[in-house]
Every structure is written in C-alpha cells, then in structure tokens.
Image (cartoon, rainbow, N blue to C red; front, side, top):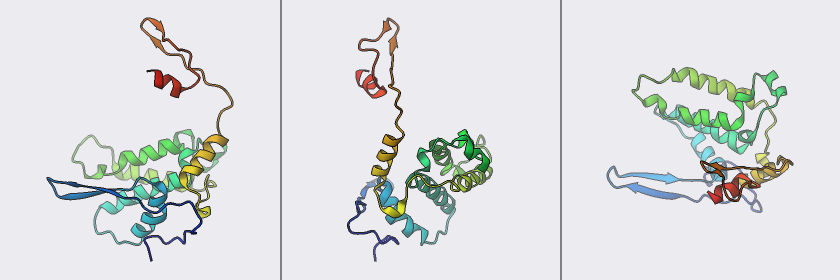
Length: 191
C-alpha cells in the first residue's frame, strides 16, 4: 500500500508525488518540498491524518489541513454572495482571504513577541469560519480525480468576465507608451 488512502484510478490524470529536497548544511535539517496540490491532498494528507502527533505542531498541521481543503475543494476561489451571509459568512470570508488568514497564523504560536493577538481566539475564529464555509457546496468534486490545475482552469474560464479590461499606466511624464493595455498581464510585460 502506498501513502494514499484513496484508490486513485489508473486512468486518472492525478500525478504521482514529485519531491524535491534540500539539506541545510549548518543544521543538517532536510527540507522536502511537494508543490502539487493533488499530491498533498491525495497522498500526503491521508498519511499525515493517520499519523500521531506528539508535539504542539499538531495545531499547525490542522491549520495547514484546513488551508489544503479550502484549496482542493475550490473554496479558495469563492467570492461569497449575499446568500452565504445566512450561514454567517460575509465578503470578508471569501476564499483567498480566508486562506491567507490561515497562513498568517501558522507557526505564530511559538513567537515570544508581545505584539501578537490572542492566537487561540484567532484559531477558534478560523475553525468557525471553516465550519461555515464547508456548509457550502464544494466548487470542485475531488472524488472525480480531476487534477486541481484543470479544475481551477475550468473555474476561471467559466467565471471569466465578459467585460474587457483596459489598463492605463501613468508615469510622472504622463501616459506610458503602449497604454492603454488590454490586460494586467500585457501591462506588466511592458513595465
């Protein structure tokens, strides 16, 4: 048996784990990097879920787990609508901001800084927000074993605005050459 508790169909496009690693020569600590959302969800998460934690890092693992679930289920991409307010959610709880709020708290409990807010209250708030957002229908169905990148692309294309973007860039001398641009990407390339 591999790391995954999932029976990933052989014909699915879910790629196997690709790990890169590095050793800090000074501390002799090995760091591994797995950048695939699919690998983290389908392989690493089931393995970590079945592991026992004997340190305070368990809370950080739980927060990381929530962030991964936001991402893989597509909640990360949500901009919540007014009907979501009935569940106690508002626009401040939209997916990406919520993801960043979780990221902001990870590993903060170990700091000796006095300027930190009460982290336990922040974590409690995150858990409540996750409970509320998970009452919504997931954007992506992970049981279909469609790669996350494909799901995100389909979502972006389905929710793409029909309004063309016009981007004007000004310098101290006036309108930059090439302005207006048809997208932020084209403007960024020019800069």
